[in-house]
Length: 267
Ligand SMILES: NC(=O)C1=CN([C@@H]2O[C@H](COP(=O)(O)OP(=O)(O)OC[C@H]3O[C@@H](n4cnc5c(N)ncnc54)[C@H](O)[C@@H]3O)[C@@H](O)[C@H]2O)C=CC1
Ligand SMILES: O=C([O-])CC(=O)C(=O)O
Image (cartoon, rainbow, N blue to C red; front, top):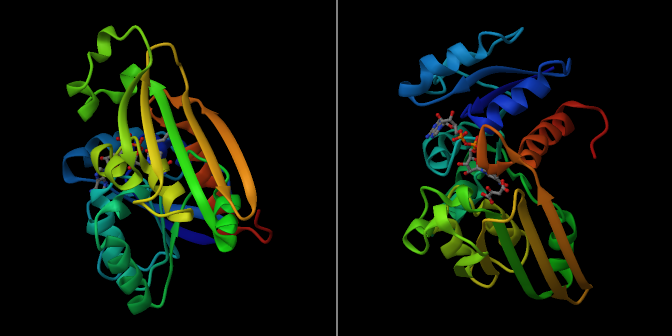
C-alpha cells in the first residue's frame, strides 16, 4: 500500500481522488492547499469514504511514499523542491514551471541531494514515449499546435490580443517558442513544455496557440521529424467541467502514473 500526499485539490485533484478511492493498493492520506481554500476543500472532500487530511504545508516529519502535484506552477518551488530534498519522490503535472531558467537544474540538484526522483507526467498529451525515444536518434523539428475554445483563454494574455467573447473565427493568439508559451500561459501550455522537454528543448520547439470559438474540445497537434522518421498526432481532449482549461486526460494521466507505482505490472 502506497501512502500519497497530493499538492492541490482542484479539477485534476478531485477528479483523481474520485477515481483512486477504490484502489486498494494506494491511499491519498493528505492534500496540501493554500490556507484560503482549506475549508472549501474540506467540505468538498466530506462525501469521500476515506477523506484525506487537508493541510497547508507538508509537515516536517511527514514521509509519504509519493507526492503528486496538481496545483500550478508556483507549487513546484513551494512544495516539490523541498520535498525532493527530503527524499520524497515527486510526480508533477505543472511541467510548464520548468520553463523558468534554472528551475530544472535546481529540481535535479534537490532530487540528487534527497536520493530520489522527479517524474514529469504526460498529462493532457500522448506520444511522449515515442518523442523521447526519437530524441535518442536525433530530432530535426517539433511543431505543437494547441487549440482550445475561446472561453479557455479567459484570464490569460489572449484577452489583450482579441475579444474572446465575440470571436467569430479561430485566431492565433501565440506563436513562438515553448518556453515563452509556458511562461505566458501557465495554465494552458504545460503540454508545450512537456513536448519540448521530451524532444527538442524549450527554445527550439515551435508553438502555436489558437482560440477557436467553434471548438468544444482542447485539440493538441504534434508534428515531429528526425532520424527515426516522422509522426503526426492529433489528440482531441474533452475539457473538464470543473475547469475548461484542463483536459480530462490529465486526470487519467495522474491516476495511471500513481497506479503504475503501486501495482505489480506497470504500463
Ligand atoms: N501537464 C498537463 O497536461 C496539464 C497541467 N495542468 C497543470 O495543473 C494545474 C492544476 O490544474 P487544475 O486542477 O485544472 O486547476 P484548478 O485551478 O482547478 O485547481 C488548482 C488547485 O491547486 C491549489 N493550489 C494553487 N496553488 C497552490 C499552491 N501553491 N500550493 C498548493 N495548492 C495550490 C488550488 O487551491 C486548487 O485546489 C494547472 O495550473 C496546470 O499548471 C493543467 C492541465 C494540463
Ligand atoms: O489540459 C490541457 O488540454 C492542456 C493544458 O491545459 C496545458 O497544456 O496546460
